Amino acid sequence: MDKLRIWRIVISVGAIVAMIGIGIAFTGAGLDEEELVDDEWANVDNEHVYYLEMSCKGGKLVDMNYSVSAGFMTVQILTEEGLNQLVYDGTAFPSEVLLSRTAVGSGHLLWTPPETDKYLLAFYEFSQTGSTVSVTGTFTGASNTLLFTGIGIVAVGIIIAAIGAIKGRKLVKRKDAAKPQDVVMYPAEPPTETGLKELPKP
Image (cartoon, helix red, strand yellow):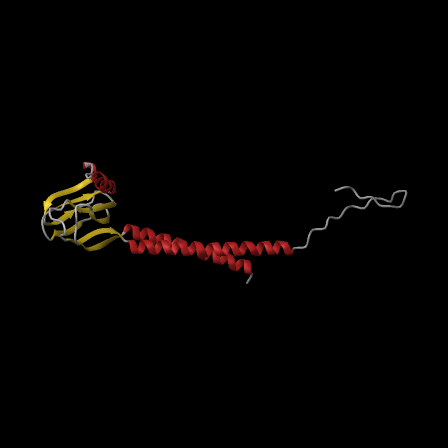
């Protein structure tokens, strides 16, 4: 089989692999995957905000249990902007706070995200420092396993196609260089008085 044809097949295979990867990534982005949470922060203080990131699918449920081993605390669900305001300004704009509970020692949280986005479950303002905060439960997010698998397959397909294109291009250049150069033949002119032949200037 012609080598150039082989590299063209390689390019086609790479394109097919990339398209399969795109399909898997889109499928993963559309699926729901339940994320399990089991976190704990020991020796908490009022110099920090302790938080959990949740990349939630819109309309899906957040189901969390939380508790502090001693005293009370404030529990909030914030946007990323709201968390930044809380950390640097000590408070967040009301529009950035999606849920707030103050002076609680423990609780059960059921919350439905308004849209697909990243939210933060934050714990701060402890009445007794040095205690331990724990949070367990689930939230529903995108199926990251399939999403990242698809992205990886797309990358492999692109690499295969690129290798095929580079090798094929080099092969074409070598074939062009090996071709004999065209010889330009000029028409002969009738003899002149001196017996020499004249050629028209190219």
